[in-house]
Image (cartoon, rainbow, N blue to C red; front, side, top):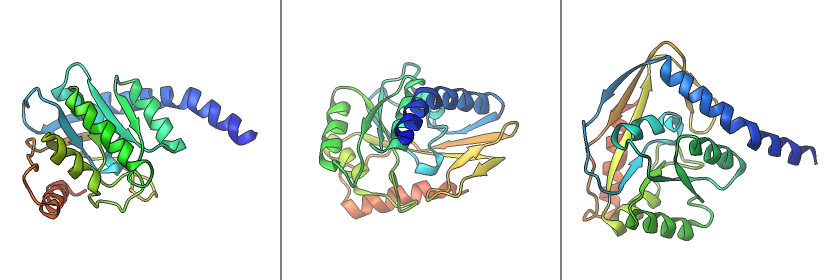
Length: 207
């Protein structure tokens, strides 16, 4: 019973607090973008490593002034917290993972793209292995022909959690470097070539 009460209260209050915290971190840091000025107004897959998920909305807003995206989130409790948090930034979510309900999630993501939504995804989420590209992002990109934009966040000052993904939380009063590739077309590549390309490009900006 205590666990249920704790989870209820956490889902009620933590996402709002977390959204404020993220905004404060963004506002109290200098921002430097190493990224294209503009991209096509077509449904795009925005991807970053799970450990750099925190500031993803702000990279996305650089290219979409009006949010129109579904973010793939774990169906577990921590995923629910993230899902409710990103809603404060105008982003919708699709709950699922590569281990549970994988086919349903992929179908939902592909339908979203075909109806005009962007997709946000962490190729190594929700549980790792860290910095390894799972199949989902490749399947979605190749089935829908949507391009993939790879994102990295490098704060000059940060806390790093002792979690499987070494989650990064920028500290205030530093500089956040945002990196983004041009949208990549992997639709005609072999599966393993696409996986190698995505990993190599994401690893270009190792912290």
